Image (cartoon, rainbow, N blue to C red; front, top):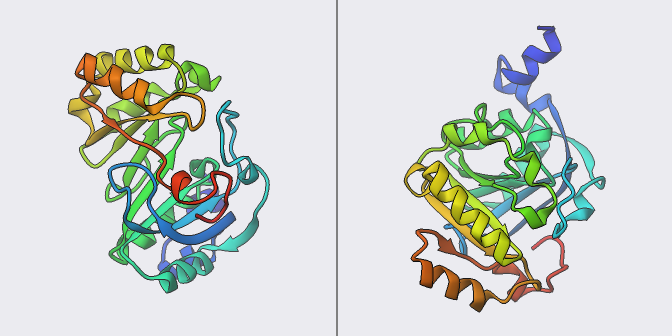
Length: 233
């Protein structure tokens, strides 16, 4: 392993970590709109780039737009926003390996740290203090074949698995995955989230009630508070 790779994976000092860089799309303060943390004040760090192209994606602007920033700059800006909780999102944040030391920095500072990831990349290197919110991509996403099922073995009670559901087929597939992998007992929560504007939430609630699904129904709260296409919320 070369010297650069070693520094990226395990900076020797906090000063080293602050000099590493990430391409950042936006940093902002809002409320958490999804997951079991919904409704709570949260600072968001949205990183640039994603290697998936889900049919329902609502953050295409993060595919390429962004600015190279040091971890020290990102850390300082988030700390100025205050509050207890920080979420790292994208894009796909795990495409940039320097996100790992950034999350450690926030954990060391006493922040509650969440990461949202597509589930297509290895989550095992993430600091154990981080709450991982991991998608399993459903058939209608167009990216079902990218699911990295080896990640499931690394899930703990701190983590959540999200299924974004756009059809009855997606729903039945998600139920099957829950059973096959024992997700209800493996992670802290399983989330069923309807694709905004594509499936009527009441239909999915009816299915879940009828089938007694041990999952949490959720809506993207921020899309009902602000314009669904708004950035920085």
